[in-house]
Image (cartoon, rainbow, N blue to C red; front, top):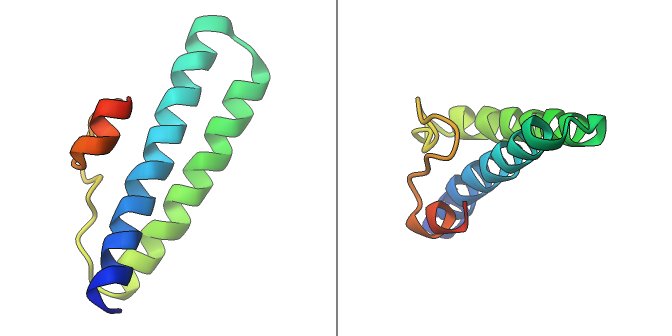
Length: 79
């Protein structure tokens, strides 16, 4: 992958985490099953992007980050 594709994959991995973390927070607040279902879908998306990162030996930007913690400052600000 070239540099642009690499940056896109890194962003995508964290963007999927952002979506998952937000839906988990929404579920915790309102206990609506739809939020839990969507969070599960976002986890699936995260796993798919991680497999691509691993294929190209690109370090995972999510690493051990907890809920609401992001490497990308723009995504951190959105959370």
